[in-house]
Image (cartoon, rainbow, N blue to C red; front, side):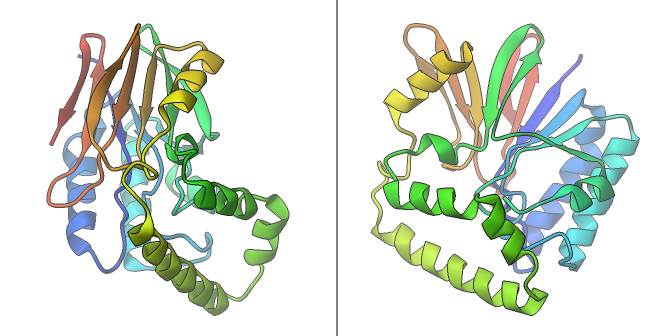
Length: 235
């Protein structure tokens, strides 16, 4: 049976070898049998440029490259943690970079996919930050700083983000229902798949919309399997 896998929010880093082990297991055992693999952002906990090197990055490149070599197309949408992943990394492992929003045909069902952070419009402070860091000229300048400087800046941003998160309510960090409906209508689809909020679920929204939220990875993986028969989460 043809199947397509979706994953997001792995937050891989040197500090969490258990997450890397989960990813390697998935790539070695399940991913090779897929018709396609979509990674919807935050594959890494933070990304400061394609010139960064680490054992985790090397392992990820190796795994994606191997799955790609098995004939499985691998696609990537940037997350809020790894929006600076560029063409050099993608080419190294055989990833196809997609835009913030993409409509893909999943066994006859047009489906909108995205990371999910753009749907959280109630988080005004984050949306303002996102708008700034996604400006091409800012990214161009940042990526030309020495690697050590970028590492320090990245650590400061990550620490501040953690502090800000503690002050935010659960509602603010979730998607805005009205904006979600507007997005469905904007793209003319009835199904949406995204990550970011870490709230794994399949929501049925009247009159006929379906919003599927990928979970983050921790003790177990969050893997969405889509077939012609429907959708389900597998471990």
